Structure formats: structure tokens, C-alpha cells
Length: 306
Image 1 (cartoon, rainbow, N blue to C red):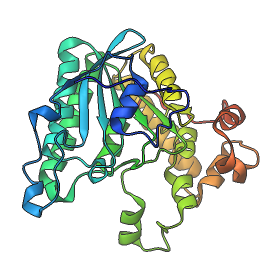
Image 2 (image 1 turned 90 degrees about the vertical axis):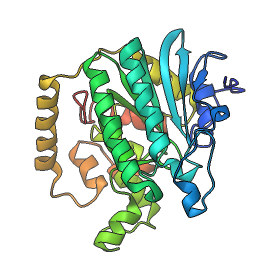
Image 3 (image 1 turned 180 degrees about the vertical axis):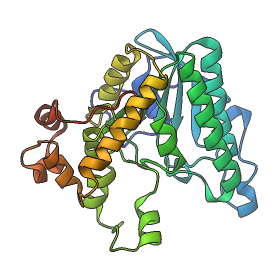
């Protein structure tokens, strides 16, 4: 099944687009071939038990395509179906795609948009996360680049945040968010005094694209457009693919250093100031290009792993 090209990916918002719209704005026109598409009716075996609606692609689209002529495999989560949450079929499709990457040598681009694991498929969803992470790491050890794009409505939470942390490169927009625990989960378990999930400014300062980019949790920061994500993904496809003990040791050392430097900070703005960013309180209001220019050379490095 093909995905029609977007009218103009220069202006199409990544945040507002559907999963299929994002694919259309990312890949070369007419190049996408879907694997296990809606016509095959591979739906969740669990949702009907709870009288919940099913979707014929189970909230994730996977397939083959090209980006500027480069052969890739693509997976895109639909955040508007159950918050892009992982279930048995949803997870199996991504595992299969990553295994195909090892067999074919194609790099993988994952368009994250997920709140984590479906509560209705808790055990199957948690198992899917583990299987995806294993398949992703094995693919990277074989030299496959796995590039994550984050800028959708649901963010990248729960098991999705764990999977994203295993990727070769993460590309994020201001609208993107990355965290293992979502705002409501933190508030429920620790109280509103610890984290007020209704404080949207706090949520974005703590988990949003600008902060994740500045502390090395994402490699590239882009504007909210399909064109910007495509350009950044294309650049990431040209980078060296590496994952070894040297990379992991460097990342562990960086994380320990981050904790030592910022462990006593109570707000992201304090971390930004410690990074040497002037007028840190103004960072949330900066336009994307201005933000990247003003923070150049001040963000943490990621050592190709998070």
C-alpha cells in the first residue's frame, strides 16, 4: 500500500500530521510500500475483550521506502489511536521490521508517537518492548542505523522512551517530549508537589524537545515541519553507524557527570544556566532557528547512545 506525497512538506506540521501524513512528508514520493497493511486485518486480539475499537493497522505503519534515493525501512506510530500505545501486534510489527533490517542491511527510521504500553495488553505490551529493544540493539551491532523522529502529539513515553534511548540518532522538535514516566504517572505516584502534570510549561521544560536536546537526550533539534525532519533524517543516514563497549563506556561516564553537575538543580532553567546559556528563562519562547543558534556548542553530547 502506497502513501500519497504531501502537498508541500515545507509547511506541513509534523505535530499535526497523521502517521501516514508524516511518512508521506518524509520519504520520496511513491516510494513507500507497506508491509502488513490494513487489508490484512492484523488487529489486536485483546481489545475486543474490553469493548474497545480496533484499527486494522493496530496503530503502527511499517514498510519499505527511499529517502533521497537511499533505501530504508520505516515505522510510524499513530498517536491518535490509543495514544500510539504498544500492544502485541503493534510491537510484533516493529520487531519484524528491525529483524528485516538485519537481513537486508537497510537502515531504519522510527516515527515515534506513543504514550507507552497499552494497559489492556500490559503483559504482551511489556514483552513487546523488551523484544523491540533486543532487536534494535542486535540490528545496531550489525551496523544498521536506527533513527528516531519525535515530534508527535503523544510524545515518546514509557517503553517508547526506552526504545528511543537505544536508537543511533534522535531528532526532535519543540513539540516532542521524551520520558519513561509521563507527567500524570509522576504526579499520581509522588504527588502534585513533586510534579504538577497540569503545568504544561513545566512539562515541556522538563521533558520537551529543547531540554532533551540541550542535555544530550536528542542529537538534533528541528522545526515542526515534515521538511525539517526529512532533512535531518537524511543527514543522520550519512553518519557512521557504531555501537560497541567504547561508546557505552563513554555514555556511562557522561551520565555520571550529568548527575554530578546537575543533580542538585530543581528546574530545567537552572540546568540551562549551568550550561552557559544566557537568559535561560527565555529559552522556551525562542523560535527554533534562534534557539539552535544561541545554544550552539553549549548542549551536552550524546556519545551515540542515551
